[in-house]
Length: 138
Image (cartoon, rainbow, N blue to C red; front, side, top):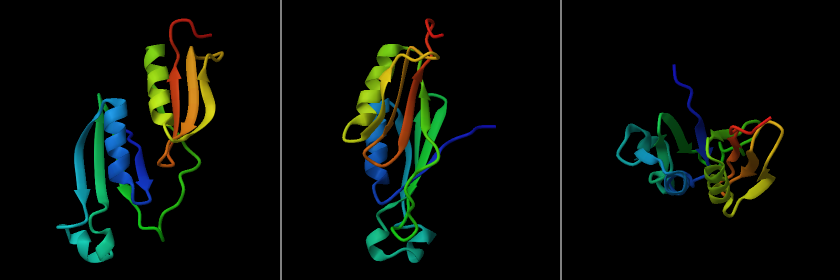
């Protein structure tokens, strides 16, 4: 069994996934628009080049997403995408990269459970947690 986040965007899925690919070091393995698919007939003409399905691989993990038409889009809430890393320097780098033009909810810092932990909402409206438990946590 595999558990993968599926994210919804308000027309910025392609931009978000290109940003994630560059900042997280993953690889986009799918970027399918509505155009040329059976779904094309079910979306407005201005929406045909929006993303129907995107897939980004990060090691053994997969992040997927889509664009939702404005009348169906809802702001992300009630969850965070969590990145667990082993190196505190990677935690800082990833946090700062994802926070670019976003909103920091909790600056990355040492906590009682982790050597580095922080929370943010990226510029695309997706909430993230960066967690590095490290050897000296506790």
